[in-house]
Image 1 (tube, rainbow, N blue to C red):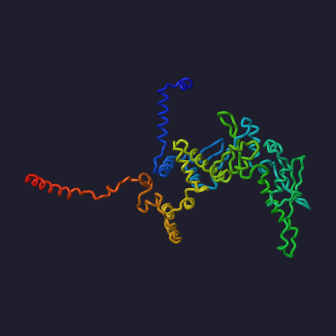
Image 2 (image 1 turned 180 degrees about the vertical axis):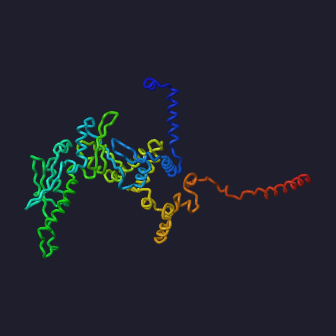
Image 3 (image 1 turned 30 degrees about the vertical axis):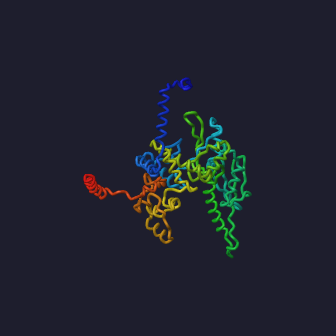
Length: 417
């Protein structure tokens, strides 16, 4: 009656629905000894042959190209440390406001001096030479970076390789410029020769240093995270919510950025996910990323989870490569059946290794019954046999002939009596 009132479902329909659910549940069961590895590998590998060239480079989200298809699957399964298009998705605490999304984007995206520079020039005077950076204040304010000329000076002073002291820089707020006095680099006194440099040589050294600084200064980062090369605001078409997508690495910094929901930040880089969030998060990421690439292939999700399990069950991410398998598998014959057969066998012989011959590959090589299907179980049970069951049973032919010969003799005796 409750089901009738709530959903207007008849008893017959409800019974049929529950029957369908039970049937699907029973089909989802795996028999003991089922070769799940081979079936899972076929389930993922066979659709991979159907992927066409157009899915290789997929024009992805909002002007950000994301690698798809076979190259992406190869990256995931090989557990590549650096992937071609790392993307971090950052949901926002205030997803409706575009202005808030732009501020968060500015906090994350790496901004260099050249992004806020109008022009750069160098001046030479009799006693000193200097480089002037002319900053575009409108661009600086429009980026919502919240930094001033003093912050740019601090960022340049932090770059140890440039060897520019903070005292050598002057800020002119009126015309928004920074003047950097260039000095000749001091040579190590221990390596100094007796001959002092002439004025011409000093000028030549200064000229080289200034040209080097003019080339390097625009590339000095002044804001954002150094590994986040680009960030864009993606607006959802369904509910008009904003998400910041970051191209590059830096998951930990993105999670700790003010204005970002740290608990919902995700990345498509499995290795970085392992480093920041742990092995379980990496396992989930592997299964999810394969599911994203093979979305239309209708693959059983348990096969993808099985692959993720195999890659992570040792506590680290091991790719399905000769290096990963050698850490993953202990059997010599199984490694020899994959790649570099002679090398594995030679190393095993020299190290006097033993092989229990338990896996499928080894048993095929040795000609034994594989431990899958009906060969998987080894049952020991009580047979309930008694002592009389172990007596000598009568043979089929000899004892039958003896019985035939005995029967007439018995009859003659009876007739004689």
